[in-house]
Image (tube, rainbow, N blue to C red):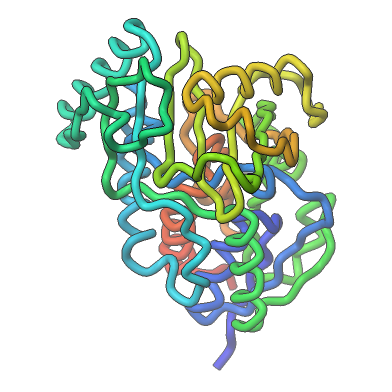
Length: 335
């Protein structure tokens, strides 16, 4: 029986998730990737559709919740259990204006049929929060994953399924030997299909390492509004990931002093004990953003599909994207 062939262009969490699902479905899969560590290596790894929800982004919330269900269902099958680093989110506010914003989000989520558990005693849940922080809400089913461990594990699982590797491509003509190609290379997608509305948005991320004598790690993902800005603290086995700034700066991936300072100030305002941790890494990545913040996951022509433009939601939407592409692949393959 002939096995159809698929070329996946991009080796981040989206490309690997698509490749794994296609291999499981019986396709012969080749992933084109380079040695550059992109957005998947820098990200925080939050699986948090409620914590990141915002009025006006109803569709993103809908697909995010569907993808979260897939994370809990079978997406983690065959992956090491320790890729999951937290199993609940706590969203908190620093001042009154921030608390008002959280109330707005909570009301909006309830209106969408997804009420969250509000609290006025956030420090009972996470005692290391700053003393003035009281207001927040809990998202019980949200997760966080070690992004780097997950990408590594997905690649290993792909290899076990017979997926092969090849170098990056500059044109779709280079993958014409495959029956179908999936463009999944993030901010570089428009170079393969001009006109795709994807632009790079820079974001700095810090990694803080726990040291002997420091206060313990948070048990949950903590998302905070700090005087109108957003910061997140994501537990890891050895510390905390802090992110993330967001601004337009072309394709620059050098961490800027102002961005790093802002993240450190906000993180320590939320959890002062982090000031004693080791500053282990400063990095910046390029989120592939679209005008409406929705990913582009669709067929472009009879031989080409796109799975890109996931913005800040790449890890969250990886299962949904893989399932959507898998369904499209079943529609038919050109002769």
